[in-house]
Image (cartoon, rainbow, N blue to C red; front, side, top):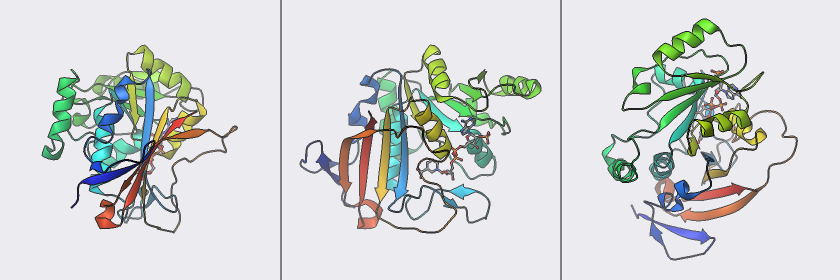
Length: 271
Ligand SMILES: NC(=O)c1ccc[n+]([C@@H]2O[C@H](COP(=O)([O-])OP(=O)(O)OC[C@H]3O[C@@H](n4cnc5c(N)ncnc54)[C@H](OP(=O)(O)O)[C@@H]3O)[C@@H](O)[C@H]2O)c1
């Protein structure tokens, strides 16, 4: 498999290796705190389709691919906090989810070394966002020196909060009816987190957008159309009061992606 990609914007340039494409974005040099999210999406805008079991949605197999996963890992490696959700922990318990940053995978040994060189722990800490607080807590959540913090909305069940705090990490109330993106990122900053990667889904992206706290959106456009419904797109929730503007930060063509079909790697900065 050819291991090169072709930069198209901001400078159309010579082909370059895929590895380090996103490490070279130097996200830790951006203003702080810096919040970024990432999705792989089909040409018809689908990020998730029904799980074969009939229960819930899952990332479509037809667009998942190793080259996108490599870049996902490069984004995760640069974070000191990764945003995930109650849904992720429920999927984990069902054996349907995997570790987000795969520091133990030999394919990503260079990213583990990179974190060491930056004086970062092997694993970023993890922020779990949940209104229900209804999720199992796997031991792995707090292994490898990782801390977990939990964000929820007003009036949580105190017994459940005590259970979670005993097993996982501190619970913060940031919002009334639902978790509020602005309050949450403010709290993350107070706790010392600088570089925050959302590996979560479309409702969390909606919350980050309404809170005005998303700085950059990474999209991999896989050249396949999937069709069907129900499905999830990049953002799910009410119409945004004001459209959120983005400006293209970079565009790269990956001719070898999806077994030679090709895909586009895009990054947008929120204006
Ligand atoms: N293609 C891709 O790149 C990509 C990326 C990410 C996800 N996905 C897929 O997209 C699908 C949906 O993802 P998802 O369910 O993780 O994402 P989600 O819709 O963003 O939210 C998941 C959970 O987060 C909590 N949550 C979200 N917003 C909240 C708020 N404002 N306040 C309180 N809690 C909030 C809820 O947890 P509680 O229910 O515990 O309250 C909710 O169930 C999944 O199939 C996933 O695999 C695809």
